[in-house]
Image (cartoon, rainbow, N blue to C red; front, side, top):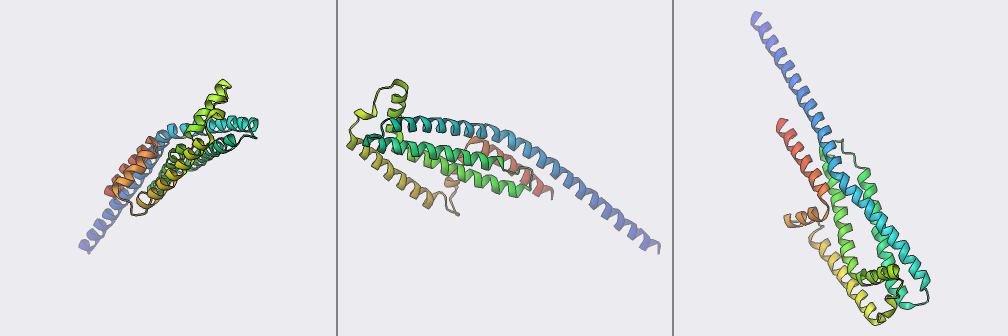
Length: 227
């Protein structure tokens, strides 16, 4: 009887010890999540601020371009080149706003796996936005420079450029955009993307997201090891 009582006491003590360990691990996990969420927010703050600046700058440039287009509405070169620039700037503004809204809705205090998934999705979205901005910029860089010069100086710079040259420049940009987007979808954005593609996405998505992802990966590894 004494042996059975002693065995029951050992089992109860062992169970209580296990429960204390579970509570300690849970408390550590909670503190780590709070700490990682705070660090992730701090890491993402410069990126979100930059997105807000980009959206404001693109919006202001789009308004200025629209004013110039209204002033030269009867001239084909302005409708062609200026219209493409206006679409580009409006798209850039919309993309920055969409990324800003998406980043503001992140629940960084949730389960680590869920936060990592959401950050990875935001990273891919920011990569696509940057890719489109760079490739579409090939289409509009020349008219954008000329329109900016005209807005600052008042000189009708775009009116002095041959219309055929502007059209060929725009067509070249469209071809570059189509090839670049097609290449990205085939080799970079696929589900089984190779390591170099994942590194490219990380490099083009901004430092804040990379730091936040790295911190969450450290916390996830610690929690797994503790468990």
